[in-house]
Length: 361
Image (tube, rainbow, N blue to C red; front, side, top):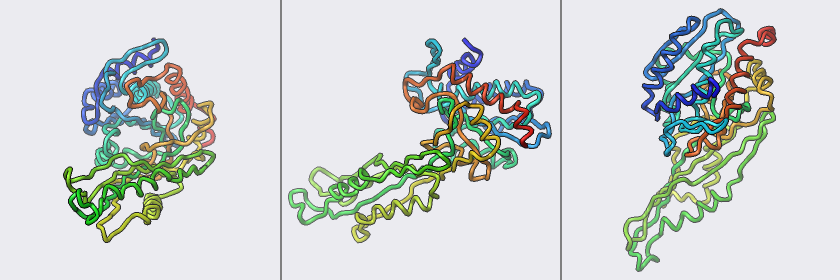
């Protein structure tokens, strides 16, 4: 078993469901404080380590410590060259790589900030990145950032924006034996869902990366009693939008889409519950272009939202690049391959020690 597989297995065996990251943060902090080249800062269950060699550029390498609740996969299990367990792909394999890279910072050509943060898998307002920023925003300064989200060891550029919307459709109550004197709000959902099912899933190409927009109904609630025509129903929608749209533009497009079925006289309304912005590819930055080169694969679009958007909002270009298949993340059969762990570690180590990259700066 490789050193990285051993470390990742150890991390999997430390439960760290969101809001319960103390034990894993303690282990990471202890490991980092043993490395002389690093300044280590602990903020709640977030751990930051930084080098100060006076290099021309600073690279941020980050990953979240939390996982979703396990599904019978609490314990790490190695089967050949694959490591199974909760968080193996998302993203304790990435955390293991960050810890190993932190031990190899005697003379990097770029200064490095390692960020291990809590509460990524829950509401954005709870993110450990926000807790770090609230304490001292200078901690998060850098020229570029790489997040070790699972990407099959291929650079995933930018990220899509995400928006949750709640649509309320009204009606008029009546006895179910005499429905013609009322208006059934639940029946009105059919027209709205027809629009959702026929949504034009835009696939814009940005800097050579193809993004894929989606609109899905994810929850519905309505009804009063078995003998009452319902006068209200609510539908929760999830919308993923491409980086060529702002939150405001994405909202305007959805509102226009539903104009034909929204009747304000019946009390209909569409409300944005929460939203997070998209981030463009940012592959023109020399450090991010370099990691694409080191990865050995052409970049692809990030289909989903990550904290790449957090850094882009703060004028720090960022990409996703980590071990593990995003399609197995959060599932009972989640796993990470040893080959992914090695490829990502080797690519990032080369980036931190590439004299040609230093010369370009």
